[in-house]
Image (tube, rainbow, N blue to C red; front, side):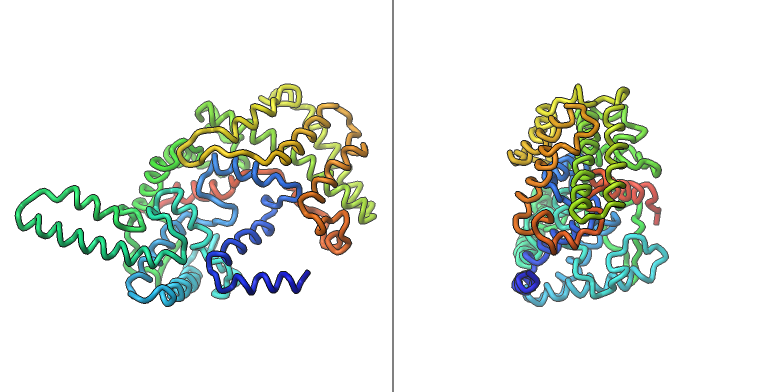
Length: 423
């Protein structure tokens, strides 16, 4: 197993796009909120994308949405070939770590621990978000960037000649100016970097940058909760989950409905993960941990069945409405999708078991088989229920945190917007 993994990673080392995709995938397994032992990631990510488009669990601070384009613009100035340019941008991103470490705000600095040996650079973490928010106007990968940048530079030069000729004749050149502005990988209104960038830099954004972000979210993700909270300056430090936001009643109907579904799904799937860990504890013959999970399951079960005042509880949660809400919602920033049928069957079976209202449900063989067979289906030979080495790697908890749908990332971005400074 180890040899195969090393071989695979060495193969992608020469392909930057493939390497970044694999590193992104691996990074998700380091995030407690993102572990997907029972294959519900497509649901979690869909809800997250609808609420907070362009975000990810491994993004840290908002100003990286400016650092990345500024560094690429800096690399463009070198006029090198594509291979050399990629080396330059790699070095610039690593140098940025050193610059940020000299500031007085280190919270969220990429490479704060690993330094310039960092494997996952900010550009790969923010690249998709830059496009989603309309900051990156051209659909291109990181390896394609400098090819397109040269093409667009030549195109802008042609526009400049035409505009100069029209100016000499005192003719209107406004349409050509608009076309010239569009001939860039980055949005033409992107604020310029500080004069001392990237040698001296900090994570706090400016008022101008905050205004730009809000406008991009309004134009490109206007129906999202992220845009609404950003435009209305609704940052609340004490809110741990989005459905508990004090402005909930001001959200539009569709957002409230989505949040209600998101909350209830988070609760019901939490029980499946508690049972998953209980079964692993039993298999490991760890009586102390096993009893701990039995206690947690009992507490969770009581919580689930005591939901009388909330919008949804087991007796009135229509799962078909849940699927329609997350799959078919028509918004400009997220196309309708279809959740895998086997995932749907697993969720529907789990809900059906809970609706039997048996406090000792977790002792039923059919319930245990549902969890075990789901994990075996997803992991095959790597299943912890059949693979002794995989079981030994279990550390007593896997995927047990309740879903928050990237709210911590969104909340940090809202905080950054709320503390923007004038310069």
